[in-house]
Length: 424
Image 1 (tube, rainbow, N blue to C red):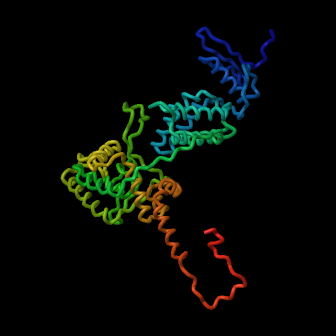
Image 2 (cartoon, one colour):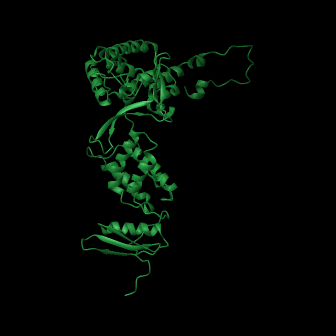
Image 3 (tube, rainbow, N blue to C red):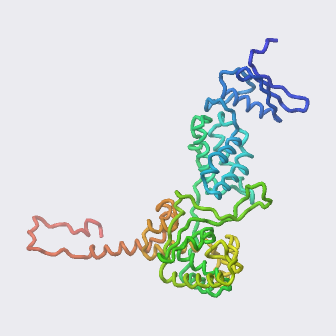
């Protein structure tokens, strides 16, 4: 039997049925244990690609090397590192919670064991195809196209950092194709439904039901409404600053036993969600009355609403979105409105604003959209009547007869009527 070359690795099965791989790197002896032979093969393959100078035992076919690197790391390990070191310090907590779920529930169980430096684009495409068919854990079927898009965007950022860290030669996510998300019909309240809901909110026993009316004419997200504090309201300029959101998020603090925690988190300074919104005069009059009621309660009980939320419960504790959603549902039942959720108020505000002639750029800033194109894509249908009226104004130009400044020169030949030319 030929002697094994110096530095060549050895793979063998131990008595406990695990697989042990022994090899040398820079003269140092290394040992790694695997539960499955396939895992050992994948590691040897990645190690060979990462350290082409070293001699290792090659078992089975090898893949094409994507990047030469001195580090052998799995996709799951890299995503964990990227989440903690690169994503968590720079993104909102709610976004981090979504990313952590994508990694924990989808990426790591499915492809987390693949090594970064031998990863192939077709493996990633197969992963997204499979998640689009079977990825939904709550019910049968796949993940929604929007969820797949969000997960791809996250992986694109993580892989971009991996390229900078020399773990990949190129960003493999760029070639991934996803199904196009179908356009969903938005629920917009009719003007009659809007009137009935305003009446129901005014008659509700909870004073904070006024927030439903307030939202109908400001277009806030539910978390933004629940996170609004008096310190961010400027009564003199009749405006308020959206700089915080209040949401129930997954808990990542091991010292807390609850799986979710309600948190008020600031919006990032570069986020267009941080914005100033103005209150129209008619709404501001009722807003002043609402504030005076809350302040009179505060004068009698200084412990009432200690954190200064604009819309709080009757005992002074802040609302969480789920609880305020319950209040909204009671009001729409009282108003006899079917199939509407709280976000319908935001859609209604945007639609009515466009119907009343507000330009898209202004509306985009009021809604906190990243770009006006997002606003136009969502609510462009509401501009149909406005476009129809604008085009109709051209009719006066079309119907106007040109004024005669003098006798027209005699034509050399009989002109053909335009109607005959057009076949009318």
